Image (cartoon, rainbow, N blue to C red):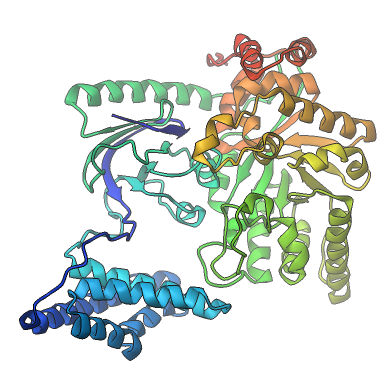
Length: 577
């Protein structure tokens, strides 16, 4: 058994599919001059095998992605025939008498390092292509012929060193039953997406495995306890099958609450909305009885592609969401990249601390071309439903004003073009940095609503990088400082009549429900999978008790005492309805 961090609850059982890391480690092997011809033949065989593999992959994806999107494979084929690259490999072999795989690795490192030093995005991308092709060639030279694509006809558990948000977007959750990664953070966007998709996830196993997990190993993933069992005993498998069946019974009971109004036992109504990253989540949003979408993370429209999405493409997606939700509220957050979310085709600077760097609204205000394109698409879609705009990571009034200037310019263009949109569309901001909390009274005068993003707010209030495993234990949503930040934000909003919702992970944590009752917040947006458990607790809670519990919390001096109070008021047994 390996103990990691449970990032998404639930139990998953099945065979492992290991995503290769392409990190090769082998000795600097020298050869005899008499073996040179044999090594060259190995090299040519590896090139032929790599070429055949690339052709196969291209044909497999061309029907799905189209010719333009699969042109990258043509570039990879060209590298295998590039005389400069191959002359470098052959030169190392002839002059230094090194084995084919050693020469290929040295050639890769030389060109990658050389191109990375150039201030030219095209050359940097070419360096990535060379590394990809070179690693594929190394795979064949070393005889590491493991399958790099998951099986298409049977379920599996994904195992990787780390996963990117774009990889997560394209997982087939009918087959990918669970996730295990060596790295990652519990509040990373991959973890957030796993919870939204209802996929059990354990992370942080780096250095905790006696032997690496191999393709085909039978695994049990316990996302609640953060445990991974590798090739467990039959007895343990049966025990977990029983536990999984019990969890399913509870899940089925919770599903019966979907049609009920979200309100406290003493009749105070709430809005329980969903956070989504793609249109494909909408069916589950409706199935679980969500009041709407409180956070549409639009950055995932921009991922796993090689160019920016056009205005028309974005418009169609936003329109589809609005129409499917049929009048329910849809809050669309503008592009929030940077930090742990990057785009291959937009060059972001290398930063020591990207969480404090060039990201979110800061990128949009510099790249007003892509910002206006997105705002035009959102405005056009607003004609077809109840859409609202949300700016991320606002830290000053100047940023808010500049964003609104771009919005007004987009409105003016659409008006001149005769394209319909909702001119009085509501605009809100994320409250996720301490600066926004401190000047919340100023910001409130210029917006229609606040949405508190607790994930980043906790990170910045406590100066804890939520992606850094070394300090992960210090990331504490129930720290007294966090509660005081929430209090200050809500009081500033209430003084000016601005609506407040919460869209961070705390919104879906049933332990935090008394906090929202005490603060008077009546709208929460969370992962789709959290809606019914939160509704279940809400139905058993009394709004009238919220103030009393909140006063107890304010007297607490540390998170342990805060959690003691919250846990004593925890209600998670499924109510009979």
